[in-house]
Length: 201
Image 1 (cartoon, rainbow, N blue to C red):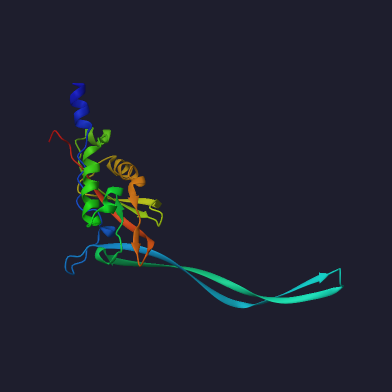
Image 2: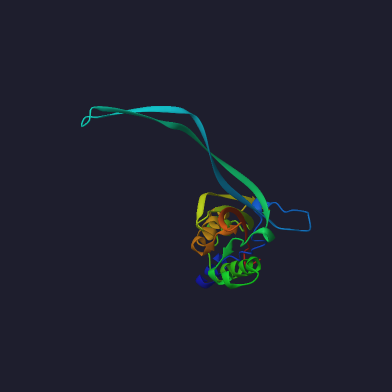
């Protein structure tokens, strides 16, 4: 009986598509796009500030002027086709040596999900619920998760599945490598779908 309960608590997460930028897909040649964010700083001279200093050793006053600068940071968000990256976001260091890092990352991510036994949410199991959760997160220039994760639930309600999906994706943080565009790491936004299926159905 305990074996059966433990068996039912396991989930079968299915990765439908790794890089679905906020769930959007282009219709142009069926390309996949990744949302990227770049920060740019601009500086504007607002005026000049006069400074005065006195040197007591030679009884001399010194004056000089320094610019008063206003710094503005702007973020540029764009959708970039996977093919235009020098290197797309990579899951698992093994894929860094592969020719098609995008396909390898999808494959390794599916294998990671399949090789790890995650607990099925208790409430969903009791109520015989299944679900599909889309977890969106930002991968920064250092390959770490930045900001909050967002979850979009699809299909039927599945109590506790959104929390469980976040836990699953969070466990992957140390396995990601940042995207490189125009020779430098860039911040990207990725979405991973996680499907919860009861094995006894």
